[in-house]
Image (cartoon, rainbow, N blue to C red; front, side, top):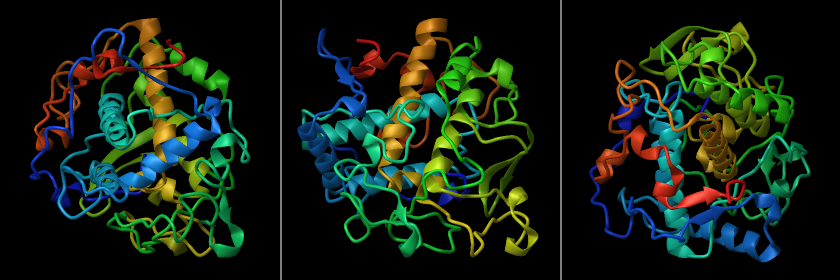
Length: 370
């Protein structure tokens, strides 16, 4: 999600040559579909294999960007997708297809480490407790510690074991470990419900003008699921990056990011004494800027289980309403159905939203489709 903003024009990794094994869009052979599971169903051995594969990507040199790890490449791409020159992945129709390709590349890299690993999803509308399976020490680790400024100090991604090196440009804290404060923020005290998910799936239109965070909810499954409400102004500040002024609740996808992080506020929601200026929000002394609220939110590996669930729900929506996508033309650059999406063209992949409409073409489905 990345609620703070970043300047995407600073991305410098697109020129790296792609290795043949790094990326593939080939259609799988018949019967070879990978089935992404609900993480709650994984055995202890499967959980360990997944965690080990994720940790291995922190050590594996990136096939695309020199001098950083494979894992950190995904953090960098997501952070820089918020730049004013790009606005590539959020607050627009390409939200679903951009993240689908992103998860596909991530899963390919996991499978380059362990071919038996699949990307599991976290169904947060069901597994919504702070002691759920995903927060156990054999998966993502637990909540942040009140005694250690909300640092995660348990599990495989705890402080001292999982270093954050790609951070938001305008983050004044630059905290090099994961912080969480599950459900303790005023913006997202609880997770989306099954009823809210069902209401979103019932919307018949994929998206609508103005193709942004201001798209009418009743005519935009994408904007309903992304989570923007009552947006009165779209903006792109050259320092803070992409943003919007929304006076309503933070729901669905956005709400999950904020629930995990604990607290975060947009510029227009901050008290005046906590503001440096009207464009750049800075956390006050009593506020937690949790990792999952930042543009660099993939630093917390739970990001991938969250977005796998978002991707699963997109597939479920298309099962009901067909493989439709809007706009064909007239939308933001990178968001029309046949527009190449950044940064994939920079690693010699011409990827468009149209190419992302059927997960089977990428070689996978979810266990709810099997």
